[in-house]
Length: 468
Image (cartoon, one colour):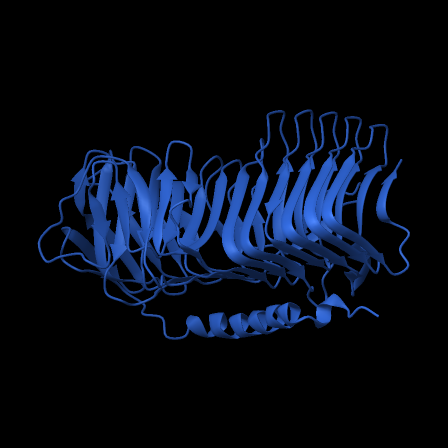
């Protein structure tokens, strides 16, 4: 008799790591250094008033503004405001933290007196923690990174590990990369989590969900560092691009025109951990796109990625690249949904695709879901696992939430297709790969290519099916 997959060492590891990360990340906010202080290298002026800090001047180069801090932490209820009254025409702020302390952000980061929407880069190699009260009001895109430095097109480097005593040689050119150190600090986002529900028509809804870290519609949100942990964290980038990258020892190339990241020069990847109903949300009109890049990507505790295309234009996609393992396992005790990568299309456009690549994929109380509610086409699902895909069981607190790869059509347009490629495919105890239509639209098709074997274990009315 084959052992149940949730007795495997990998599953035990995932459980223990979730518990450990939850404990550690909760403790991280306790020793917060509640201050913003200049390190004197970029003409940055910080005016404190209680827990509020006003930041002025810096070094202006064209549309770029550079700030350098010895500490950058914002206490609960406090704020860090970049007052651009003396530099109103800039479009991007580059901020580095050189003092060796973790940045604990549990208040507001904002800009003031600017003529343009302003994007903000926050660079701290020692680590960044966003508490449950952290928020953004910057008008443009936001990138938080624990890289050592930001590289620019003309060869200039804005370094947090080698800032130098004299004012640095800075540039008007665009950033092209992030130099990751051998042991970059972690990035943690804490909050109370999001509750995903199904509306009466089957579409996704959210309740009791905090705003979390949010950029304005059409802008981008990126977290690039060592281990990336969402502990009930909520991220929102409506109609923009979201990037979660966990990497070390190399350069992450960056194209700010398209807001795309390239990891070809990275030597090692680290882990990305979702727990306690964490949510990455890129829904909008049109929906945005998201890319997760790491070593082990673990999505647990009714957490996931949500893309709802609410408009008539082409949606972005959900893309997940794990260099070792993608695992979706377990849910909260009061959870209403399994762990998920979920796209929906509710209008006339084409829905977003789900594209997943990892040597090993384990869906234990989790699923890839693509749904169509409109006259347009549902999104497609493409899964490539060189070694194996294991799908096992249903969510223990919600028997209708199966471990599944599924496209479901509730509309008049065609449903999405499923393409699965792997060495070994194991489906057991209620899991399945399904194309379903519950309306007038046609179902999609499923294609499964397993070079080694397909194992169907246990009583299961689904396994591999198409229903109308």
